[in-house]
Amino acid sequence: MDCYAQMLAQLKRSPAIERFAQLYGQREGKLARQMTRYTRLVKAHEDIFHAGDKPLYLISAPGRTEIIGNHTDHNNGRVLAAAVNLDCLAAVTPRDDMQVCIRSQGYPAIELSLEDLAVRPEEAGTSAALVRGVAKGMSDLGFKLGGFDAAVTSDVLGGSGLSSSAAYEVMICAVLDALYNGFTMESTPRAQISQYAENVYFGKPSGLMDQMACSTGGLVTIDFKAEPVVTPLSFRFHDAGYALVVVNTGGSHDNLTPEYAAIRTEMEAVAAFFGEKVLRQVRPEQLIQQLPALREKVGERAILRSIHYFEENKRVKQMVQAIQNQDVLAMMKELNASGESSWKLLQNVFCVGAEQPMTLALALAKILLNGKGACRVHGGGFAGTTLNFVPVEQVDGFVQQMEVVFGDHSCFVLDVRPDGAAVAFTTAEK
Picture: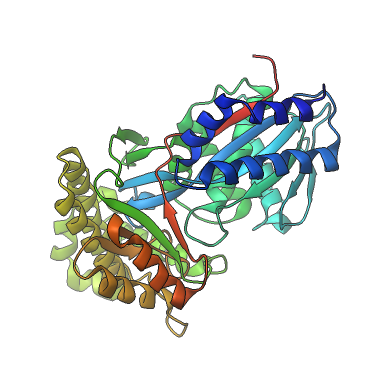
């Protein structure tokens, strides 16, 4: 029996159903959808690569939702984030050489050799750059490398604010770890390697929050003051009567890197005024004391964004305390305050001179929620998605109204996923 027949048989057994429920939740239709999705991916790998009796791995890395802590991680701040039950999924087999062949649904084919791990400027902004960068980061830390053939599918939409690039990077790292290192890597170095690939090879100056949430899984608070300190939290919004609804407003921030990068640059310019590298090394009262000179040096927007940073760090701590106290009203208060701050101070809800679908989505959410729940910009901002905490009894109506405006299937009702990067199934001997 070749690896494909073995895997398809494995997917039909009862332990597979339990595994699907763990990774994707038990909402109506979820398990059947994932069974179909996995089966199609296995067959796609067979049609493309014909791996025979090589060990076949199905490797998953989740997207993430930023609960609170908007644009704080890149200045060593605090965040609260969660892995979600949308993922980047690969069916993958090892090769006997250093060649990598990836066929991703809806994207150009990737073929490259891991014998060449140098930065290639012409690859900036491509998935090939991420593969090469992850391999280089792993090699520098002493992990083994090898070639592989992969068929990939993802329901973490690109440009959606759910961190499709981080999910992809973390997945590639998990692939090389599973195939050649016994899947022994801890979640923090996996996240750091993925960030390195995105910063140095892909060319996007992201912080570490996205990769850390995708790599670690569950609901976590992360303090980036020095080395990241990850603290898991035990809480389910659904148990408290709320659903997480992400609304895709139709815009993408894929081409908005300059706007995204300017937030970090302006915060660091304020820090540099005080002789520091990042805002975490600056006291909030220093900013107020030096406001006239600072205003002349860096401008008003940089100051406003820095005020957001300091206040948002406080909100993360207060949100964590509210979660630990199971105080849902306090949670909603902090979430709404975060949304208002991102809108007014951080100013990452829309770009000047551009359409404003996210602003419209937030305004509509406030009307529909009518003082209940919370809403805020999600992820990098400027375009993409909003995050809404909707009372479960209002979810159907909320989704219906949002999709009238933003289109069918523009809303995702999400669960927190307990697992980060994972080998979902394998035919390899254990």
